[in-house]
Length: 153
Ligand SMILES: O=c1ccn([C@H]2C[C@H](O)[C@@H](COP(=O)(O)OP(=O)(O)OP(=O)(O)O)O2)c(=O)[nH]1
Ligand SMILES: [Mg+2]
Image 1 (spheres, protein in one colour):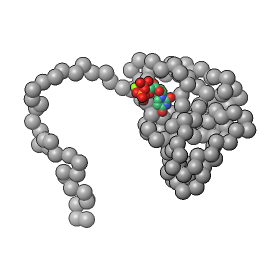
Image 2 (cartoon, helix red, strand yellow; image 1 turned 180 degrees about the vertical axis):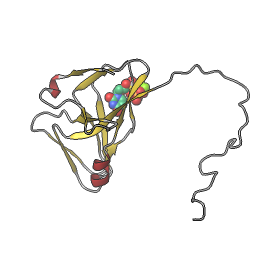
Image 3 (cartoon, protein in one colour; image 1 turned 135 degrees about the vertical axis):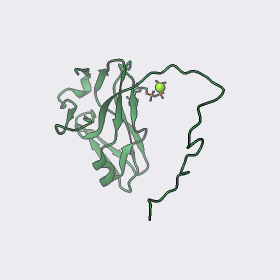
Image 4 (cartoon, protein in one colour; image 1 turned 90 degrees about the vertical axis):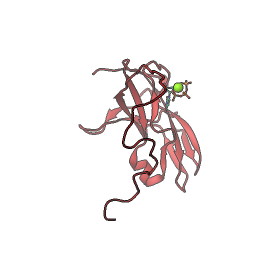
């Protein structure tokens, strides 16, 4: 499926978002900071990082801005609103809301792969308000109602 993206001036010269392997689910997104700019995320701090891209997703699809597990595991840096939602009718710049949950300052420079964009189908439904819902075995049980440990543990 072809999807139109637009490169904004701040992304000039940056690589296009790309799947890092044949089977990768997400397109890696690059930080479109100014050349030479260093953005330091202090422990506990968050910031909106530009990607320099806008996208026209077909109706019936969304973009999910997800963390990169390497950044999370090594530095505690993740996407605060994960997965960020890119609506199919959004034409503004895709931005990434990163937060540093690690103990050390984390430096972001132009071109760094900061997150990944997964394109996924979404369903729009027509809601119908009713007085009663159909009965199930689970019923209203949730939030650990089936126990916490595996069998025999
Ligand atoms: O990580 C994100 C999340 C959202 N967006 C953009 C695209 C999305 O279509 C728009 C709105 O996002 P969302 O619906 O999550 O935010 P909201 O707080 O509900 O804002 P709005 O009232 O504009 O819908 O912001 C991003 O660029 N990055
Ligand atoms: Mg919204």
